Length: 399
Ligand SMILES: Nc1ncnc2c1ncn2[C@@H]1O[C@H](COP(=O)(O)OP(=O)(O)OP(=O)(O)O)[C@@H](O)[C@H]1O
Ligand SMILES: O=C(O)[C@H](O)COP(=O)(O)O
View 1 (spheres, rainbow, N blue to C red):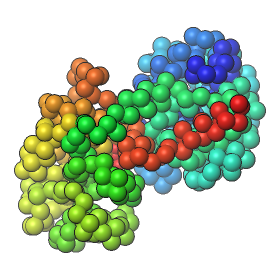
View 2: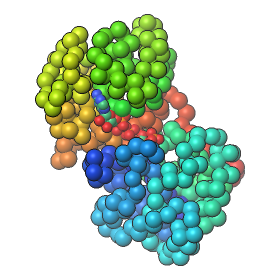
View 3: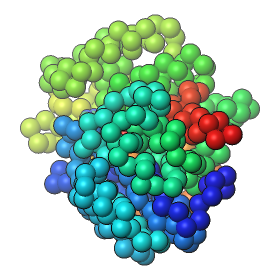
View 4: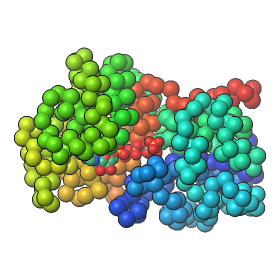
């Protein structure tokens, strides 16, 4: 933001305020919303007007909701009114942007309401989308603060830098500098604790981590663990297999098997917390009757002992279904071990961050709370992030 003129301009700011939401559509954690306040404040203090764009969830998923509640929460954190616009590129949105006065903030609705935003393509192609062509002429500059979406080559991330003077926001800047230390070979062993539900994304990351020998140990939880358990030949019982099948996770078994056979340092739970007709119990991994909802106590203890010895610990994706209090313990235990250990801790992904105690006073020289989930892991596994590549193209095209 120091590299382009951002004074008294109309700025399009891509943020990532994609947050975990409850069954009835309420936001469960506002960390990602709060994180962008620093960038928005700086832009407002310099006399700019700011229009925010973000996605929330994916079409078809329960958390694919409008950004109306996000606007209210952001207003509270910012101490300024954030006007929610129930439109993205239609006449109402464009008129509202044109009329926007300086030092005022608008939040457009969920950018994934526009189908083009769901396509991953190169910046040159996305610069020609309706989304970019409708919005770009209304702005003087584009700032990308959405580190958590930096791994997506979508129009709102890579299209605008080609047509507007563009910069990385403060959140993006802070993330990239804090995470760079993962590449220091002296900071070893490095342990990755990977859980959650985005198994297709996570296996790609694990393949990178293994190929580049970045992780000394990978401790799995959530649906990621279930995939590797199946790949190891464990019998998870038909109910769990049906869930994995429906989510398309079983198609990943051959890739998981290949990783295991190559000797990748991937650990799976030895026990689980399961739900059986509404009641909760713990079961060893070779005798599963219920639906798997969390790692078990013994697994949490073993994982914690590994974590405490690490020089760098990266945690992303919860160990269980944390939306239900009864299945939060596994995630809480691994987090506690990481914070008590001696190593540098990187916590990423909306769900894992939401497990942290709200009041905890964390030492920023020891703990980095990343706003990123998939983006964080892609970056840490040494891949180039499309968002950063697009911003550098923007620099090239201006010079
Ligand atoms: N055993 C399990 N069975 C089903 N769902 C699970 C299980 N363990 C974890 N999950 C689900 O995983 C989801 C979180 O995974 P996800 O990959 O989205 O994590 P994240 O780190 O928050 O990602 P991001 O920040 O990129 O959105 C939660 O909704 C949780 O219920
Ligand atoms: O939560 C995330 O990782 C980001 O908001 C990106 O979301 P996506 O995985 O749905 O693209």
